[in-house]
Length: 497
Image (tube, rainbow, N blue to C red; front, top):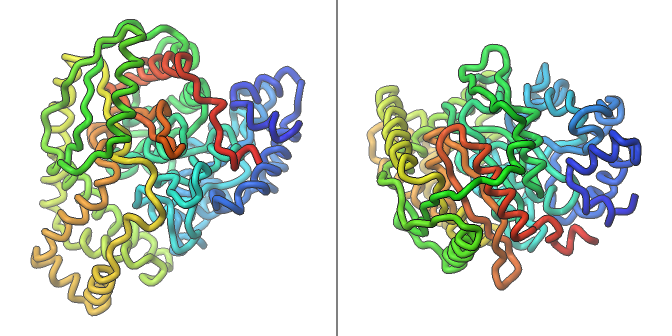
């Protein structure tokens, strides 16, 4: 099998070839490793290889993912006997004692998991850059980010190393990198995919696991593999009567789709992002769908504040967990330490009050979906940004570092003097990705679809959101769009050698 042959296959096609004995899983794994050796030095998408494990485990050649090479993300997707680094030095020596449910199910379906993908520390950014693993680069333009926090997974898929890779989405981390890398990314409803057994829910249920892929049918297949509750899960969602892969190829019917191009934070939206939505509206109308100008009526700034409070609280808890297992404070990046201080400064009442507001957003969104079927927005406020573009100014980093190391930051945070700083960081950090957090706090599904490339040749996906449990409808629309405007063969030059 040539590399050109390999990168033209999605996971569904690979598994069919293996089941029909037209190719072996061993040959597919060899091709994946050749592609890894060709492209990974340029993009830094893979943080660890599990080659011996993949070679020892004979794939289930009758499984729906028979022989398919796969990578998993270094966050929550535990592989027994290996550390799950969370993109941090702090977790480098903490070894998982068992496979996570998502990993076990991929293995049982026949996938060959041979490595892990890079992520920012604790999955905290919309870009994939960490002091532990370095900068991960976008295969379409290595001076640009592949997004985050599943940026390593997206870069690996876009570069042709694997047809799909494990990912998770706590604030847009499937949709953001999919949009940056010209890929398809579906964030499932809360509880649709188990995050056990080590956890019952991640980020208070804001995060969901699945994959980033090049084809809609591969994501549907992955959802079939994963969409069942595991013993002890806090949520159980009824599975549809048919497999998602069968439902996805049905016509969606005529849908009423609301569209909005304005940032819920009132921040700037680039003309490229607007053009991506406008082009998608024209395509939807040509397919017979009704598109209306409308948006759910919620306070975007308040939602961002609630999201950031959750985010800071979990950073503080995760740092405490790592410290209890032997990590040092200095094992974390300075910004992570600062967020941990801000998280520790919140009292329990503040956190609960903030969390209760999630229900308000869910009710507003639920009412909105009584009027429309789906909701279209940009996925990102602009095309993939250059590395370092979202970094804090040097003077601000120096000031915060001084406050952190002197202990003054902790004092100021507990006195409430840093509240304005929290709001500023929230606004600045989410200005690139203001559209994604609504789905996370409400637990609803959303997808980024690769329908637009800028004049510079950069991908820029559009986002469709749906009501709770509407993955089948989203997949049907995505399949219709993929048929009308195919993107699978659109690969960066780097992937083609």
